Length: 180
Image (cartoon, rainbow, N blue to C red; front, side, top):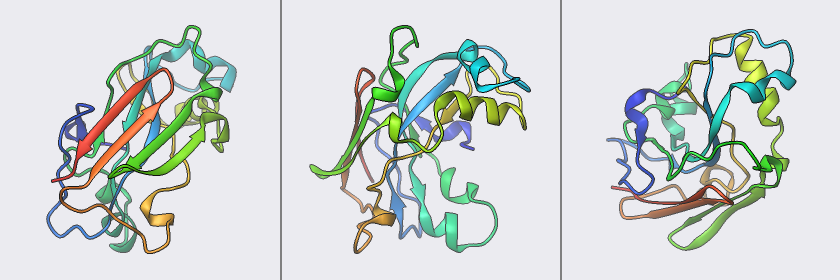
């Protein structure tokens, strides 16, 4: 879950929280809900509820998320932690599994996989979530991230003030954030 104040533009600065030691990046395919989805009967029903797709940087503070017991939300909901866009692309003609997700930190490649590599496809995710909550028009579902985030790399190169993260998904555009 991401609070509303986490959403910023695709090229806006991202604020590193006070006392953060493990701020991380995550290029993700974002699904924007177009019509209410509740208790869908199967993943096949999901497509009718999708308005479109965008790029999300699902920024996370790993210490807050994993080392301070309790809810993960603490590490996911710092303000500016969900740069979104630059566009909302409608599903027509978009081959979602073939979309390539990439990220770079200070020009160094970090993530590079396709949506076909996701553990669960978009239809399954939307169906599954609808079993527990109503997805409303305008809701954004971040779908998960490819390997290559700082938490999984040797020496865990977490983000610091001045770092620049760039993200790209085929057909959906490109983002660039400076971390301040």
